[in-house]
Amino acid sequence: MNIAIPTEAKQMQSIVEKVRAGERLNREDGVFLYHTDDLLTIGQLANEVNLQKNGRKVYFIENMSLYFTNVCEAHCAFCNFRKDQGQDGSYTLSGEEMIAYVEQHIHPDVREFHIVGGHNPHVPFQYYVDSLKALHERFPEVALKAYTAAEIDFFSRISGLNYREVIQELMKVGLVSLTGGGAEILSDEYRKKMKVDKADVSQYLEVHRTAHDLGLRTHTTMLYGSVEKKEDRIDHMLQIRELQDETNGFQVFIPLSMQPISPKASIRRRNSAFDDLKAIAISRLMLDNIKHIKAYFINIGTQLTQVALTMGASDVHGTMVKERISHAAGALTPEGITREDLIWLIKGAGRIPVERDTFYNEVKVYE
Image 1 (cartoon, one colour):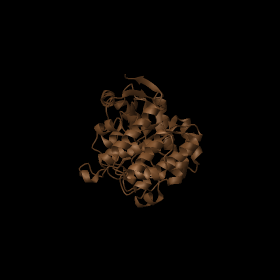
Image 2 (cartoon, rainbow, N blue to C red; image 1 turned 90 degrees about the vertical axis):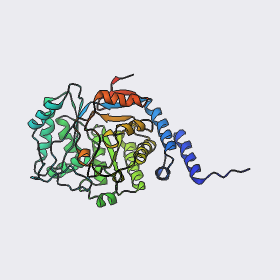
Image 3 (cartoon, rainbow, N blue to C red; image 1 turned 45 degrees about the vertical axis):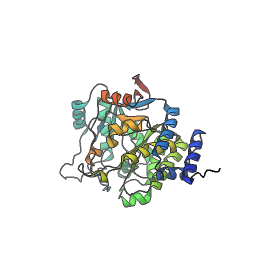
Image 4 (tube, rainbow, N blue to C red; image 1 turned 135 degrees about the vertical axis):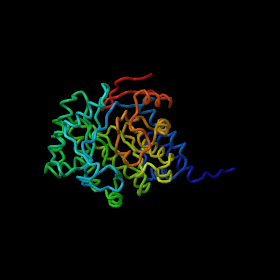
């Protein structure tokens, strides 16, 4: 007797076989994964891939988020962090003011400053250089992971320097890595709809290409859950994968769950847990040439982060003292988390916590 196997089951089986054989998934595979509701199979497969790459280790870092200015010339539709010059709540800190803030909040184990902010056209490029210089001179032992590709493009426009020259000037004063923000969805159609009033797709990729050529290892993100199609998410991943094939400069891919404008927004205005887990798992399956996929607890919460560790994630970011951007947009999660809680969170998922530095060198393994 012949048993008919539904087409969807056949396609899923084909993907399972490709992944287990070490074959690269294509666009059609990725789109299928986004349209099937078989989350358990996707998650199991992503877990297998992650265990091959990273074993049971899950990484975190002791870091601080710093924001020198929230004044921004861009008016991106999804952003509730930005302010106009002179608007209530707007600010632009000097290096001395930031040092005073850091001295008030830092603790001895902080290894990294995560620095992003607005595109403030009322100060020169030298302001952004001097900001890093002041921090590096006062805290030379703390790594400076600073600025997004969109900020680098902005610096290029206001300074007249090309991307290489901008990054080199920042490296002279201590820059060691770029943050991953500014990618949003790498689709010109999406960026037009969402008024992404900053670096376009080609510029975002070119900044990271240039940084990689200069020896920097960088991060990259995907902000999902608004007007984009599922196909746009896969196309985003494929463009990142293609650049990684070329440069091998990305350390980690970070799916960011879009936050509503208001913390009081209903659950219908937020991404579902189902979609958040899919984003993690499909990222792990599509991005075969990037070692780490991050579960960003600031966006998806600590408990869902634990589940994500069994669905392809190998990084939970860090202690994140005083995160502001996602919280300005309505995130309900803590603004930071203690080392002890991160370790508990990772162990609670049956994994091995590993404290790392900016470059994923292991600092301490908590067996």
